[in-house]
Length: 446
Image 1 (cartoon, rainbow, N blue to C red):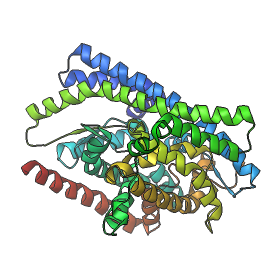
Image 2: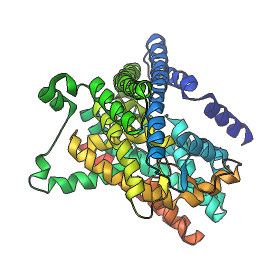
Image 3: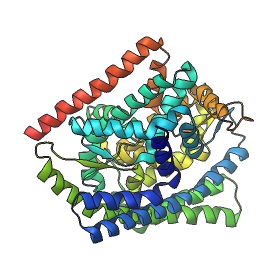
Image 4: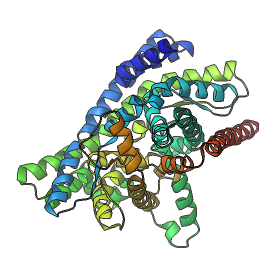
């Protein structure tokens, strides 16, 4: 057991940019893509990931500007947003986190074999979302086994959501053979489904839409992503009270992010395509009757859509204003401002590419997320303090994954008496798996 934990600990510590090219190459070889195509695909994916990390890092200028804006207008709240890197590190550092990668891989394999998921989730680094949920529950109850069971329930739900949303992902974002079992992104999919259904029922409102393509047709060059990013950066920089060099830097760096992120996402998808094609042929040949299968990836691959980035950037200043205006909220978004585009990666496809519906859904998700982050501040602080992180901060949380509605629901269920909580989590996991298995079989017959 210690060898297994050490092995997966090494994989986690090596990071995605090191291990993903190796994993993709090995998958390509197993699927019969050939060594040359597999190696090229793996390296291209690695380069794409590095490019995405560098490009999303440009949004650090956005966080700086918003921080200055908050100080300028005296926007202060009691709970500190520590950001997803710190939340992920804390989740993996707990007892639940130490088991999470082998446990979640095993669950994924079992679900594939039993035809209760179509997703081969190779994004092991984002298993931290499941570990985060389990760690909160373990910290609250003192039961590591209950935390692991809750993490498994979280994984099963997210895998099912990844399967269900994969066709829309292919239609809207042009990503065939890919699903996004990402704990943060997928958690907002049910809200998007409800919001889209409600708007569909409202005469007049259901016809409202805006897209960057439509914007470009109406206002020409000023609707292009690079101009949109520049203008948004300029407005935020001016609101922050930055000097000429400051607000111009913010504007140009955000314009760069709007251009570079889609190109890096496209490069990543270029590397995956031959592997995805080989996987489809392999499954058709060796697993006939199991239907379509997807490679589960980080939702970063979908951030490259211009509309996704634009909506995320639009809601950055809005989220800060909402944080101050909402009664009872204690969290001021700061470090995690760059994760807002990740929220829209599945919202946009579910809303069929409709920018208006996606924006309304995003506003609802952010408002709800702020209250969730406030509610989870206590257990999040407890987990971080238990491993010696941020012990000088009295109250801390994050947008990702502290504002995650699925994490909050599972955490709330974890407050039930332990015996009942075990049963509830088991019923949830089995129920979602059985439902998905029935859906897959029906899809195969059709």
